[in-house]
Length: 531
Image (cartoon, rainbow, N blue to C red):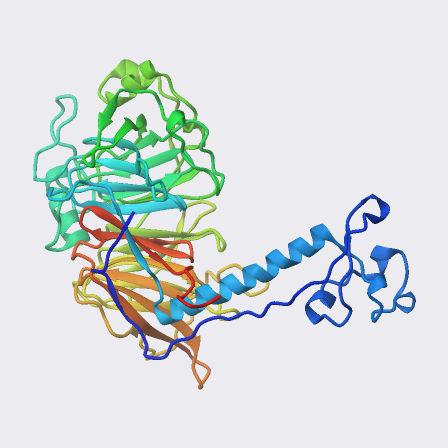
């Protein structure tokens, strides 16, 4: 990975950094009772904090002289665990300070060759460092963001149509009819792309998602496809794709000169051929949720489709019009389906609340229950002719509950507090939003152009990305009058105008908007000169 200085940030003038103190430990390993025992200075405050309870040495508080180092015995495993916990606290403090002060060194992972007219379109991760991204020419890539020797781990060339207004027909049956206003896929595509990208549509893939070794992608031709990345990747947070695990299909040479294996096609999702899939999102139960331009949200159980498939079956699955191939596929149907009043442009899942949120083309923010997929309430934060383009359910500061954050096609962002029962952790369906008459839910400043994406690095903080080429970092805190105040701390700039997706694990902020590269902002790095 190379570094780039084209990205910049506008941060507050004041800065802070975390610091930590260290103490020296005096220890002696005697091997008492067959194991190592650590003795430490009784006057060492840090060491005293690891004093075992009286029950651990078989006596009571009166039997222990805390001022005698001979009576202070620390098990190595407990001491190590406590030190790790202290280290985690220090790291958390440092990361929080870095988010507040815009300390985030930038690196770029090049996926496509320089000088080409192809661009990265969307990037998603299940867990760092394995990412999936689409391109403006309809390709799907899986990348190891930390692998300097062969970044591209798998690729499906031409997985989706690049663009244009071609009329799509299937099996000689003519054009598919679609929802979201009726008409054909071609006319639906034109309306959908205008809602999704305004006047800055550079073509290609619409949405991607990854969970373990399963990848999902959707394009402007309609529907969504499933792919398998590699054998044995699983859902482990520490899993890494290895070259020799990749499916042994014919190899190709990538645009950056690397050799990689093709992604293995699994199937197309049923029932979606007639609509544009605007968002794909996996939950932790192996369900794939789709939001669609026909005004629906569907959930599919794809957990059984992560197994290895043979080369013959993989080749058959590519041919969607082969009746015999379809008969050999594992059965799949939607678990849930929910219908909304207008086209769904974005979706976010909050498994903590078992709640999903949708942004709709009529300017609405709608909520649905993840246990049955059913819509139960909607609100219209935007005015006439303004679409709700992006949506997020975020947790605010401790004790402040949750809120739905919704970004509009006009650049406005609304923060809508949710009415969550603190005892049960469930939403009040009869009165789901905490809004007072005359309360302005819009926050400022607004983006110039549509708000394309949102993500949250942690409690009380979220990131919005707009077609103005900026990622803005927002903080929700309690003001002096007791009300919740949302303010923009700073903006990260230098992105291209087709910035369209962002993901964070709290330590890093990863996005497209870098032409042929994926942009990584690292908030976990120590400041120069600190220990």
